[in-house]
Length: 51
Image (tube, rainbow, N blue to C red):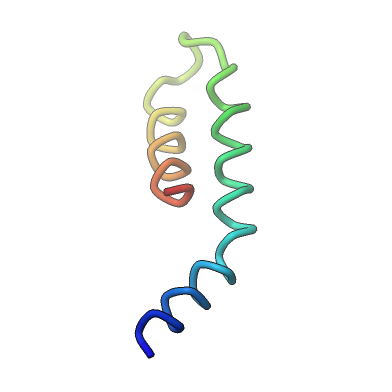
């Protein structure tokens, strides 16, 4: 029962994780000098979602 609930959760959130992973790849292309604090926090949030 727990495995099925976990699998349903993973299946439902797969598009969000894929989107966050794609956004993280594009965010890594931002030059390092542009507001590092904002980019760093956004990068950390996207990495958390993608995992």
